[in-house]
Figure 1 (cartoon, rainbow, N blue to C red):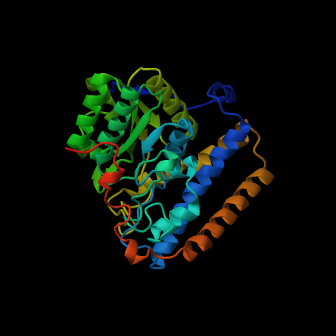
Figure 2: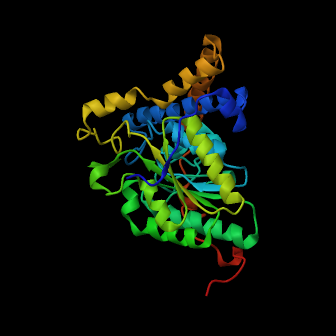
Figure 3: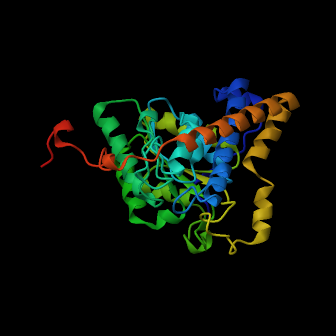
Length: 347
């Protein structure tokens, strides 16, 4: 039996207005969805051209979850999105050309060529670079929330993890600590139904990952991760609740990973009919239809937005290709802390 609250889909335009979004905001969300998918589609091209070292991971099918949550974050909030959450980076202001530069290990990428192609973020945008696909970033997000509490700052931290990663101790420790201290943090589970090749029924015995939240003393919410407006609404509620001292929330975004675990994986283990079922719920197509039905998105507007995004990404690819490789003489710059730069010594 499910314990967590299961969120309803967003229906009327009045509900959207109540959530603080106007027509311009809605078109902006649509544009960010297109940019998010377009960045990763072009990343596939770069990989096939041999320009991306290592492997390559995408979040196809997860765009609505990432864009919805990124849109709900406040300017001073912080988060640690993972490799399926490109939309968070885009919404927060990461320029696509810098993403491409990072994919290719160039000097103008956020990590300046010093880390894996998807291990990236810009702290100036309130985002913390991931160190692993596992839930290692959840204690980091909780640490940020604790700092906000100590400093009496009205800020919220967000931490992402996959449903497979929920089996690790980092998840339990982070949620237990945050729950006992009612810290201003929101936990986001990207449940794409497969931990590499392991299906959810072999990953956990509860009906929903969000059911576990009750044991930690806070609310769990399950939301359709292909419904960008429902994700936005639930994330906004959770973030503002945390900001007002109401403690953590665990939001489980249900999606399907529409590609393999990474570019080297053909996902042969996923039943073909499951792909076909979820393809009908494509988050971009779903939102496009909602815009047409509720805010009268015209063919002209749609074509203009699509053309603008296509031009943006073409220019971003060109600029990233021109970015230089890092200078080997600067290899250790920014890797180790200089004790003279620390505010207090470590003992």
